[in-house]
Image 1 (cartoon, rainbow, N blue to C red):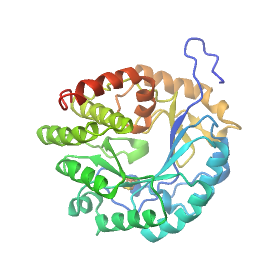
Image 2: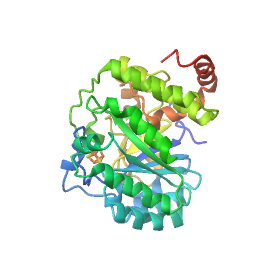
Image 3: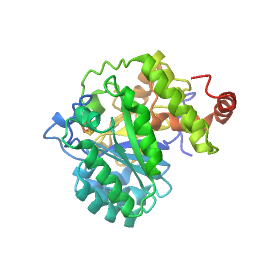
Image 4: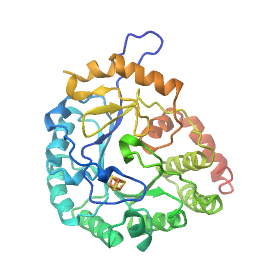
Length: 339
Ligand code: SF4
């Protein structure tokens, strides 16, 4: 694998990324200002041919990615360039018919692709957070349409906020009832990913602990190692939410990057140091091993910012199987103790 020649800080090519393909959004979420961004150029499809072929996990995100009408062309280009990558599209799910239509085309290109539908509360609570009438009903319609297409790689994605923390377990239960996966994040400020809104995320900690206890015990109570790893991820998220510390080191800007709709590459969705614009280089390595990318990594090292997100923690969890196994054994025997 190609490496930079900057001595001790040798950097390999990345294996995980988020591609934000548009800022357009038809939601009005209380924790995000992206939908207020107007008049921005979208990266031409041909630019995605410059992505590194080493990628193994790709999250297609936005804004609302299905509002980009050429999303099947983007997926086809990315699949050709990164044939070994697992892919998931994150959507707010508010356009069921459009999503179904586009997914028929996308599934013909990448049959195992996943879709994550953001659901930030049960029933009306979801609507209060997303500010879209009938938000819950629209999302459940999208989910059912995708299930009818034969999709099994489906999940609900919950973003924790003070307003919805008591619904965490209920949305988790809904995923169990419907036989799909559950994932979650902790809302944070991010100029380039959530549009610069300041999120002062301080949920009621007693309620949060109770909700995590419930979800993690359920996950650990199974005999499915993937779900044990999810319980460990949830443990990391709980620790991050109370202490703003990571339980494992992640690798923003080395194993991972975020590509925004304008073509700017960042170390992650919360690290605001631009590494370069993909449109200004002939090939990926010119950007990844360029001076701006090295300067951004230096900022991550020196200024940093703790973060625990599925995109960056996934690689860290895989890198430390023993730590995960020890935690699982300790907490599986006799129920959750080490939240
Ligand atoms: S969080 Fe996602 S769905 Fe909500 S406004 Fe921002 S980009 Fe749109």
